[in-house]
Image (tube, rainbow over all chains, first blue to last red):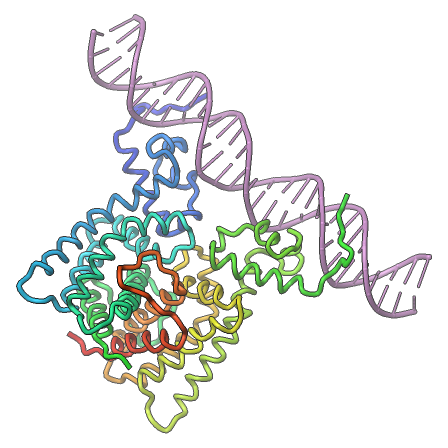
Length: 215
Length: 215
DNA sequence: GAGCGATTAAAACAAACGTTTGAATGGGCT
DNA sequence: AGCCCATTCAAACGTTTGTTTTAATCGCTC
């Protein structure tokens, strides 16, 4: 016999599913997260995913869109402002416009950290579905970032810039993915990881790398 | 009725399984690769995996050990030589000792490219099993790399160096993972990807980043 | 030829999976 | 009260999965 709770329908079911999905996709991956696990964590019924989102894949897309669209909106605004400025932007300014909102995003609410981890890993995820969703959402901002950096670094060929941007994105993605969790820590190392000092450190590294002279 | 081929037992079954596993784990991930898919590609029977390796997980470990142990041996020798030298190594020399064999590895045989992709992704793989195998095998060389860099960059605090090493490994991993395959290419970009010029480019970037002054 | 051990095969097992189905529930409206 | 629609529920469906089981095959040795 079916068990139906006293307060049958809850208006926040969709949100609970998104929150649980965000956490579990970040920690266990898309394939490593079953819908039964996910709906248990969300205190929802298994069929709720198909009802609200249509499929597991569509839920994944919704998880990404929920936060990545606003984040990219913010990044895009930052970059557009630099391009409209009176002076040519420096590479540090461009990178900062992209990196700062990204790393600061982590502290906005409890779920955001999981999201940052998920996005940090997305670029290299073995799952085609996940990687394709991510790339679709990232293409416009990637191209804008690339073109804005090209303005800042006119001495670099487009292909060299392309490679360097990938090195930079690799470094940033790894940083996001780590989220201050280290499995191997050498003696004498106590890595601090507040967003502001981490941002400063990664910008030092990336700016120097982008501006390096060719050998 | 069982179908038994004329030449019943083949001495290379184990190797074919390892090769197929390497390719499929690299392209589809550990979880995304089924044993049926894998044994079909290896032209072996489903039970062969359990017979020769004991489990899917043990096969994964064997795939990693087959190439990563010799690669790390080579990296380790390179680094040890630098530490035994008369002069303090430069950060570029240290990074080169680590990066060069890694990117050059790709060209040694047809399967090695898949392996490089697999390793490039391993650091951030959502699958715990895979990541743990990888980290177990990487811990000694990671610590050696860290300590050798500490010699090269005595002006950096150990914690700053730790972060920068992670930025560098993120950039390298992403490069390995990409393997010259790009989904988003801006107009006017024709990225060349031969190992030697790629190595030079990534070393320029990483060296500058490691040596950046703090802001 | 018989026995042995290594190797291979197909079938079987138990579990897990995303999706679908049909019924129940609750709130709003007439 | 009855109807409608949105939402939730448990069961069912068909498929897939890693592992195990049992028997057959082959080469070697005596």
